[in-house]
Amino acid sequence: MASQDSTYRIKLRVPSRVTVTAGGHRRDFDREGFFGWLWEEFGERGLVGVHEGSMLSERAAELGLETDSFTVDAAEAPRERDWVGVDSQPVAEIYFSSREGALVAGSRLRTETCLDVPEPEEQQAEDWDAIWKASFTGISIPPHWEVVPPWREPPEKFEGKLLRLNPGAGFGTGTHETTQLCLELLAESSARKTLPERILDFGSGSGILAIGTAALQPRSETSVIHAVEIDELAIDNAIDNARLNQLEDRIRYTRYLNEGDRGYGLILANILKPVLLEFADDLMSRLAPHGQLILSGLVEADVEAVAARYSSRLGRLPAIKKRGDWRALYWG
Image (cartoon, rainbow, N blue to C red; front, side, top):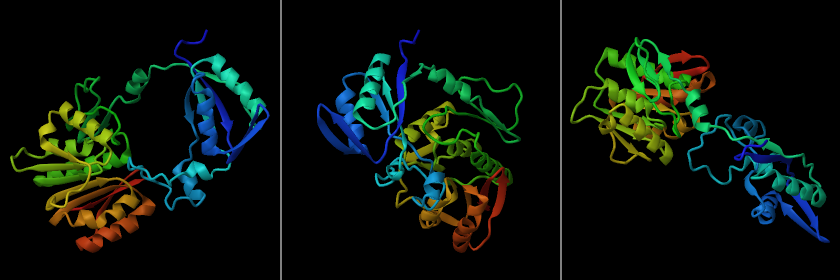
């Protein structure tokens, strides 16, 4: 028997133009118009969602739609980035609240369009909260860090500092190698000398690097840790994470770089090559003389261009730290 909370999905390829013939009338739609027609016809008959299709950034680069295979969704992706719109026949998914509604819609689509319409598939309800919690159990980054979610107790014995992190909208739970590289560089830098009072975490995501910095930095009335993140949901997640670590009073969050914020003794940016190149001048103008710089989110092919751009301003070459396929650059 179907679950009360099940939905029913019909997957179908939708070309750039769709003809609908019903009641002796013929209507021609582009793809967007066809999806709008679906809502008109079935919105009050059990249609609960339409997924118009997707395309990976790697595929978009192969087709010449993007210049980089890694593309940053800055939470304000431009409307013109419509990769699916140029796909010849992307796979769309339409969802219904009942099997009966899906069967009726499928029958009409077979009769009134030229689309190949399969039978609906039941999508059983999932306990997404339990699945989400099971997906993140924490991670050890010896000898410096232990990262655990709030629903787990830390190991009885662990090395380094404890960070509590609630996975959410912001990138960075410690499981990705780019985050681990930055955390390692932070701890190594702190072991050599006291971290500076003014620190910028650019593209802070979950806030893990800003929180880690606050955990390492001696408390001071004049210290400033500034976290910049364009995604408001990620900022909410980061603030929650700072509270979990009782460090919310140490970090200031904004969506953009402020003109007056300068003289940082350490700047961290764990993003991707296109953003690091785009904001190179903005970041370098805010770095104090002889300040430290940590850049990550890079693969081997990205290192030369990013290192050259920043080294030309700093007058010195970076140390390169490696983990798997990822690289981090450090100017000490």
